[in-house]
Image (cartoon, rainbow, N blue to C red; front, top):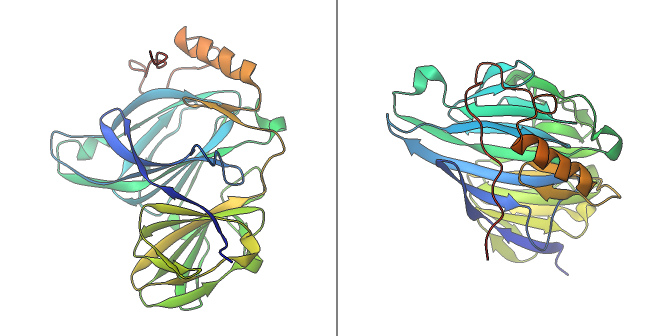
Length: 297
């Protein structure tokens, strides 16, 4: 019997001047554990006249995890953080009651040809932390646990698994794992997982339950403890999941919360540019992304 509950195909989405592949949420699966949103950015090659420019925009009720494979993003936020994200490092921003940030091509790269490729992830917060003070952490690549096992290279980017703990300061029981293999390998890791689990295939392909699965697919598992698959040569996968929350999470634009009224207030505060709720981004004060208007039928 197949352990694959659902296969989610990557769908194109537009974030300003940049196209991404949207993976979560999906109409049949709104979240996997506490993970509520995953965008696959790129791979994209940009000319001297093209740059990533996602202006200041707000978040509530979640943590954002940015993880790059190629390229560079300059992160600035309303806490005063101003840091360049490079491949292998982790940006972990917890919005809590409200934070604003921008994501742009760094100044020194703006008039050059460049590439950009990575993942943007949202992780919902436990109910008691949805109104917490916002925080920001940047974890260097060298500090991420990485090891070789079963003929493959592993990284524990966030959370707990394999009796290891990532330094990313997560707020619930979860895991985000990278597995790379240059050769054909059988991988069995079910006993190290818990809660809900899914596999995202970045490159290459895997064989599971008698089927072959290729890039730009998420496979949602029926039972995380049965996670076993065969990696074809030159394959990279990401396994993510954890313990789901008891309460439903609602999503509107960049807002995630267990209370719809809190989301409505956030929409009003952002539309009115209430600086007490959403302060300006330090060093990027002159721009902002407007609240999207409701779609007309």
